[in-house]
Amino acid sequence: MSVVLKDFIEAEGLEPGDRLPPERDLALKLGLPRTALRRMLASLEKEGRLIRHVGRGTFIAGSGVNSTALRRPPGSTGDALRTYPAEVFEARLIMEPKIAALAALRATRQEIDEMQKSIDRGSAAETLVEFEKWDAVFHRIIVGAARNGLLASLYEGIHTVRAGNLWGKMKEQSLTPERMKAYIAKHQATLDAIKDRDSREAERNMYDHIVEARANILGPNT
Image (cartoon, rainbow, N blue to C red; front, side, top):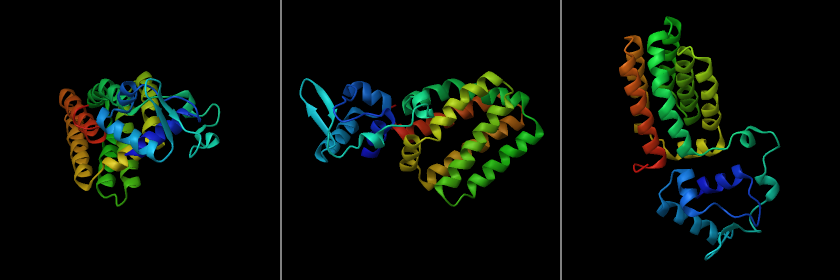
């Protein structure tokens, strides 16, 4: 799991000598229990990547960290949008269940067919990358079916983060064949509600799906 912290350091563009956020804030940003975060900090300190000073904080060490590699190009998406997995799930729980409810009222037959196709392709996926592709397609079709341009624009920020390196590695570490089957089942339940034009059921299924994904990625106590 130390890779999560390494990717955070990279995404923030932290250089040797820079200080990490306080432990409490960092755990909240990453959506991790403080005990898990402390193990990561200890591991990176042992590798010589971090230096911890009692009363002063935790700093990026000069050795083992390439400041050039940690910087993203100016104007990149990572600079324009800095957020963290816990924040992403908060936003998704606010937006996506309501988007699914709107889609139940507004989705066309073609969009419903495309949703079903994305579920079938995801179920048949033989690699994590392929599964993730069709998972993202399913959610984006629902967003489009809601027929709300502002919500669609806001969702693009979520999609950008989900396509990023940090999110991808956390998702990869959390996914198992059983969990992928569970996600597919919840996608199908959401789509069935949309087919029935049952906005309340579509909203409930999407909410449960995101809560389940959050627990799998960030832990059951988030």
